[in-house]
Length: 277
Ligand code: FE
Ligand code: FE
Ligand code: ZN
Image (cartoon, rainbow, N blue to C red; front, top):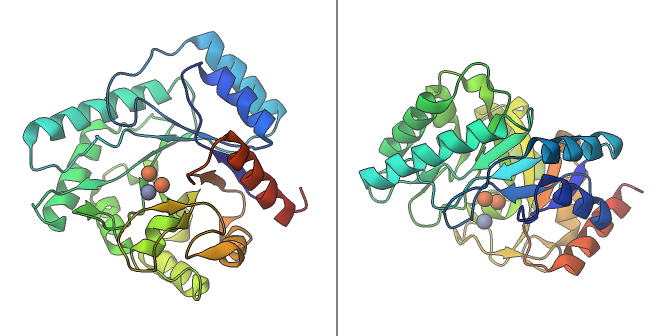
């Protein structure tokens, strides 16, 4: 069994997202901690959090997967962008404590010409500045497609970041199927091989969440264009084999496919049918 959901708008608060996902038939969800392209985040209202927590318990939801802003870049060559990213990360993580025990996923960063090695150092350095030992959120590094100067385009780069983080018991990985495929891991023809490699390099114990997307492009394209389930180069058979693989048992699966509400409800229903839910 896995938990299934999609991205929701946080505009009407946390409780509203809980109700919406119950209506969608899902059992987890994601939201952007602030406008995905940057900007401010709203203050947390305690009653709103408690109302959501009741829904999560009553409906037996899995872990939730908050998503950082795309503009947050801990390894930009621009010092202001880097400082701003660090500030966003710190504020987001403080805010996440109102909803303890959930996941916070972010794109490790784009080194913007500095080179992956410098990027890795700066990302780890940023995390070392903001993580604290009592925090209750697990921070997830997302597997990236490798477009532009993205860091995290292979398992080795993610491992290198994790190795440099002092409090790395707070760090996990979110496996984005579109990104990982686009970066050159053949999850269609060799899922077991890819997962073996993940286990050897990162460790399957770090695998905490999945972004469940088909891809508009072929394996190794480094493009990062998501497609609806079954309509891309990964295809429905491989998506199904992936979801049902025992390595993902109990994990939250977040759809980031190009869909409207009806489309998400349809995909959630499809995935649930694989598990006879
Ligand atoms: Fe992402
Ligand atoms: Fe993703
Ligand atoms: Zn993507």
